[in-house]
Amino acid sequence: MRIVALEGIDGSGVSTHSKLLHGKLVEAGVPSCLWKEPTEGPVGGLIRGFLRGAGGAVDSDVMALLFAADRLWGLRLGVAERCGGRPEVLVVDRYKYSSLAYQGISSGLEWVDAINSKAPEAEVLVYIDVPPEVAMRRITARGRREVFETPDFLSRVKTMYEEVLRLASGRGVRVVRVEGVRGGVERSIEDVQSEIAARVFEALGLPGP
Ligand SMILES: Nc1ncnc2c1ncn2[C@@H]1O[C@H](COP(=O)(O)OP(=O)(O)OP(=O)(O)O)[C@@H](O)[C@H]1O
Ligand SMILES: Cc1cn([C@H]2C[C@H](O)[C@@H](COP(=O)(O)O)O2)c(=O)[nH]c1=O
Image (cartoon, rainbow, N blue to C red; front, side, top):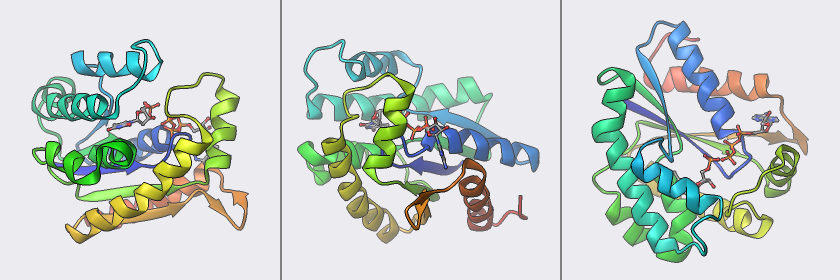
C-alpha cells in the first residue's frame, strides 16, 4: 500500500486537498482510498472529544499516545474494513507527521517518533505551507474552534513542521512542499490542487492527471 500523506497547520486546506487528490486518482483509474485521522474508530472518538474541549485540559503525552493508537487501529483494522481490503494508494488526511509536529512540541520529537515507529513512513508527504494568520482567518470564518486552533500554537506547529519535513526527507520520504500563499496572495483551491495532483502523480510514477 502506497501512502500519500497530506499535512499542514489547521486551516491550511489539508482536508480539502486530500478529498480532491483522491478524486483525481479515482478518475485516473488508480485503486485508491481516502483515510482521515483522527479516524472514526473507537480511539478517534475519544480524540475528537478532547479536541472539542470535552475532556478538560489536554495533555500532550496522552494525546500523542491516543493518536498513535488510533493510527495503528486504522492501519490494521479500519482501512481494510472501510476500503474493502488494501488499496494501491492510501491518501491520508493527516498522518504521523501531524503527531510529530503537534505533540512533538511538548512531548519531544524522539519519543513521539518512537511510539509511531510501527506506522510505516509515507511514500509521499504533501506539505501545504500557509501562514498562521491566513489559516486563522479561515478557521474563524468557519465558526467552530478546536483546542489547537490558536495563532500562537499554530505558529509553533509551523516551525516544528520544518524539522519534521527534514526528518522525513532524510528517511527517503518524497516531500512535496506547496505554497498556499504566493507573493502575499492566497492561491485558489484549483491552483493549489492542480500543482498537488501533478507533483503527486509524478512522484508516484503515474501518467499525469
Ligand atoms: N487554496 C486553498 N486551499 C484550500 N482551502 C482553501 C483555499 N483557499 C481557501 N480555502 C478554504 O480554507 C478552508 C480550509 O479548510 P480545510 O478543512 O480543508 O482545512 P484543514 O487544513 O483540513 O483544517 P483543519 O485541520 O482545521 O480541519 C476551507 O473553507 C476552504 O474553502
Ligand atoms: C493526526 C493528528 C492530528 N492532530 C491535530 C491536528 C488538528 O488540530 C486536529 C485534527 O483536526 P482536523 O480538523 O480533523 O484536521 O488534530 C494532532 O495534533 N496530532 C495528530 O497526530
